[in-house]
Amino acid sequence: MSVKIFSGHVQTLLGHFIPSPKMEEGGEKHVVDLPDGDRLVGFLFRGASDYVISLYHGLSGDIDSDYMQRTAIQYRSMGHSVFLVNHRGVGEGVGMAQHPYHSGRAEDVSQVVHYLRKQLPDKKQITVGFSMSGNMVLYLLSRQKGEHLPDGAITVNAPINLSTCAVALTQGFNRCYDLRFVRRLREQKNLDISPWAKLTQVDDIYTAPKSGFRDRHHYYEVCSAKNHVHNIQTPVCVLTAEDDPFIPVQDYREAKWSTSVELKIHPYGGHMGYISVGKNRLGNRRWLDAYLVESLNSLIQRI
View 1 (cartoon, rainbow, N blue to C red):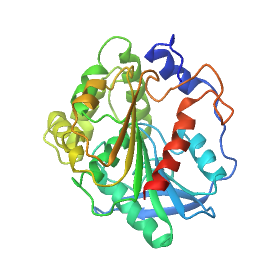
View 2 (view 1 turned 30 degrees about the horizontal axis):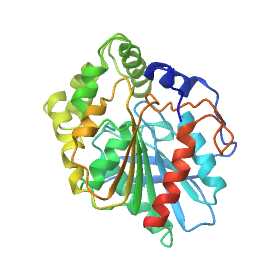
View 3 (view 1 turned 90 degrees about the vertical axis):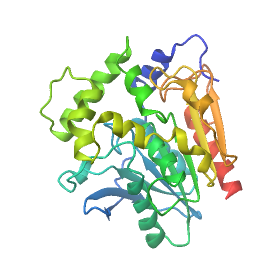
């Protein structure tokens, strides 16, 4: 299990500062058309199994994020096809989107599912959403937006209540994460906003109005998956940590999860850290990596 003496902040930081392996090859480039005319870019690595796993990065990340690369390497080693997704306007998709990605873009995940159904019609699909993308996936599975559903899903540290997460990011040491998100979004989106701005300001000035919401409060209210997860009928494994610094665990305890959801609230792990004392069966100290393998195998047995 994760290290008991490490705080949620230490878990979070170690999870990103400890070096991770990266894939040497780039995969097949695919451009996916979205319903509103925007496009996103993904990269396909073909495998021999009957499953294709699509991976979605968190806020301000991309397909080169450490957790995306590690997970892709592990799933490929198991013989599965892997599709790494850059959200609209990210990576090689820069210039292909007029609208921003955000936590409620379930229609984008839906469109990728539809695209992969046509590309790999004989394979079952499992969708993995990290952090922000986890909320997208749960929003889709709750049938709030999007028509095409995967056969199974995994979410990791999803911000299922965007309002409480936004507030948490403004408090104490969390402001460091907030500033990092803003800095990376300024670079990613070429935003003309103060580097000292808060993410809530980015949502008010950019994300909400560019996405058709009245303001950030309207965006948070509409796009939070928490109030809809009772509608989920697709098998899904949901992971969060008791000590995630800016995703309150109480929201997970209050949510009315359907019987299709296998919820795990781990006592330690921070935000996508989950560093353990001893090595796991994969040979590293990343409990999260082992969980992702075990939950994938569990889903394969259920779908």
